[in-house]
View (tube, rainbow, N blue to C red):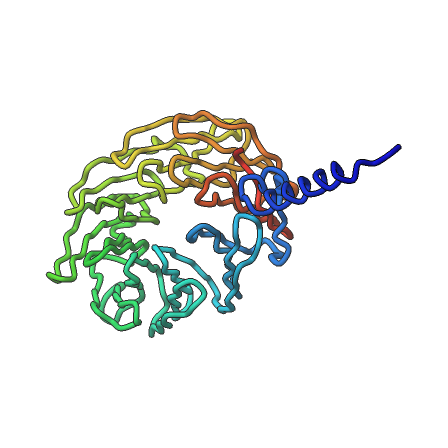
Length: 359
């Protein structure tokens, strides 16, 4: 058989061009080359916690913070030792606070901006988009205190809590909001307070009897919400009560309030099942979904919800609809959606993978 060298040359040239396109156009590369599961080989062990940062993911534990892309590549890593680390992300800033220690570290990407040392153990921490840091600790003469630092680690304001021990904290611009826990006559009380440090003014917003508030968060419009073991409560930017959503005696198993209009709550059902509910920033129920298995993880990013049961990972929508489940190649400890909401970071006892959850 005689080979036409001219046609062969054109064919080879076409293949080379096609190869260049595949490796240089992200969409084409993803379609042909990117599998549904990408192992993050440098992360081993099940003790990693996850936070979204820019277009990637922060995986952190007692020894380090790693920044991982949605292709499963570790882009950078910093070593930072802490007993009980908790990472907070706002804009370009990363705060790692040791919640049982006396140290907090403020980063811009992988670069350490400042280290803050406290005299007492840190109970709670918060970060705002301008790099301001709020740390709640013990305080002499008070049940607790909050110190606000600028991005250079300089103290700007000190607050003493006389109404109770601080259990939750968030900060925005010149205000912070706290939950204070107290006990009286064998009863537990949670008090929500809004503090404006420009006027050195504390406003008591509400006191809840027999409720334990363990999370509090500013919304993007300046309002804020508080999560307790019995209810979700919403407050206006001046501290006025807007609404309270009772759990009606149901046990709260998991929740995520990172997205203003898609706050997600997971309750245990009657037969080892789970009920997922989504709420708007105004406390309106957007949708509900029942899962026959116990849901162990819940995440929310924009309009997307991610849940896991055993090794099944499912993308859910606020109205209760869902995509098909994706089966993890390993056990599932924690899950987190990337900001593109197409991929999820999944950690197991001895493995970590990036999983495609939406085409």
